[in-house]
Each structure stands twice: as structure tokens, then as C-alpha cells.
Image (cartoon, rainbow, N blue to C red; front, side, top):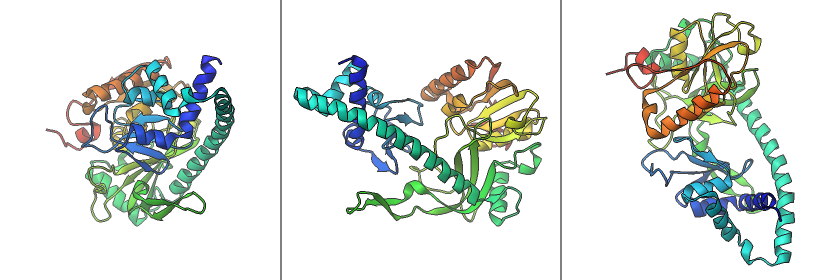
Length: 374
């Protein structure tokens, strides 16, 4: 049996037992929807929100620590958590699956079944990803349109004004990227159980609902990929307080290659309609991006939702004259710096002129813009 073929069979065997694998490797974690979510035992971030997430369906075993940017496949998960090399991870996987105890006949049956399940999983993953994308688009479309004058839009504008952002002051602002909803479920706090008759997971209690700013995440050519949700306090112009373990921001569906397009530079049209090159400024957060859009009207501005997301935005288009990454001062931590280095390397591969700008004070450009600096 070829090494490559055996590797694929082992990977599939691990994917078939992915929840058992997560319980073994990350016993302090728990299932949340389609993900196994845990604090990272390697970095020891137990006093922070759990950001190490492993896919339990679709791309089973694919994992990422959203705090450090570390990520990989199911073999890489073993390698990372056991702090071993690829060879050591592969041997651990063989032991976990019991391969070396199998008879020749059992091993042959395992290989045949693994190949069949791999094809099934690929098709299920494709269908599930499209379903998630459609759900995200439906969530976005349920919100009131930007400029409709809804009560929740006024509440959101008051929140942004509290952050020093005046949407009306942004020249050539994209009016299709933001919507406003009076109630959006904070879905990661929903409670689920397994229906014994069907084996399917059933939501037994929805998560709490809050007013929210919903942002469409699109590719540079306009395809809707995902949405970013900022949950707001229902009474005050503040983010919703969900406690130290839960962020007031969530993203629905796969965001790779997409961003929230906030402003369109001097030409004033979205990137998929642009004909003239202009600088593209990429930020992590939406509020940082909105602040920059107010201050730099000659640039196109987009928010990618994470440091690694910035690096995944395609930039090799004629409408991009250069790329500027809007950095944050807390990115000087070792883990964030590693993510930033990878991001700059990815963007640099496009061949576009590339630069990094950072605020001279405060955490980010939004802090600087609203004067919230020491």
C-alpha cells in the first residue's frame, strides 16, 4: 500500500471518529453546533474565550485557533496538541484507530470503506457549505436596509456615534453592506439535544436575541459568502454584554476570500464595477474600517473580520493600485505577530505594492479616531 493512500485512509478513519477524537484530545471542550470548541491547552488561554475550533461536519477535523491563527487538518491537530512531528502524529493515529491490531481482511475492509466515505463526505461538505451560505444570506436579508430609517438603525447609529463613527460622513460608503435587525439569535448559546428516534440534533432552546448590525461579506467580484453580526445592548448604545467567554461578534458561514466592503474610494462604485485603480485598505474589524473610511476617502476600505481573513482577501485586480493593512497595536503580541507575518506574506505574493500602517496611540484606528487614547 502506498504511503499517500495509507495517509488518506488514516485521515478518513479519524474523520469518521471525529467527535471521539476531540473528546480524547480536547476533553475540556464541548460541541457547539458543527464545531468542537475548546480553550487551547498548548497556549494555556483558559481565562479567555475558547477560540480553538474543530470541524465536526463538512470539513471534518479542520481546525483553527482564531486567537493565534494556528490551523491545519486532522493529522495536524494531533501533531499540534501532542507537540510532536508528523511521524509521531501518524503513529498516534494508527494506535487510536487500532490499525496495527487488524487482520489483513479487516485492514482491507477498512481501506475500502474509508475511500467510499471520503467521496460521501466531500459531497456532503459541498452541500452543507452552500446551505450555510444560503442561511447567512437569509439572515442578512431579514434585516432592515441601510437608510430605511428603522428604529434599530437609529439605535445602531447611536452605538456607532458612541464609537466616534458617523456613517453620514463617509464618502462613497457602500449602502448594501450593512443591515439592521431588531432581534438576532446569539446562536452559539442555543441548547441542543439528540432525538433518539432519528439520531438528529434538535434545538431545545434558542440562544438569547439582541438587536444587531448585520454585515454582508462578499468576494471582490460581488459573490455573497457569509455575514458578520455585531450584537448590541437593547437599551444602551453599547455592544451586548455576553460575559467574558462570549464575543459580541459572530460570523455565519465560511468567510475565506470575502470581506465587508465599506467604502469605494474616489470612483464611488463597488470593486466588481470599478475600472480605475485605487488604494485598498484592509482592516480586521468593521468599526476600525469605518473609522478609516471616514478619514481616508481616497481609498477603498474593506474589513475581513480577522487577521488571517485579511490575508485571504484576493487583491490581484486592476482596481487595486496598492494594498495597505490597517494594523492594531495589540498585534505586537507574539501570536498575533505570527498571524500578521503570514498575512503580509500572503498579500505580498500578489505582487501589489504592500504597506502596513498602525495608529500612533490607542489599540486601533477607531480608538485613535474617537480620542480614546492615553
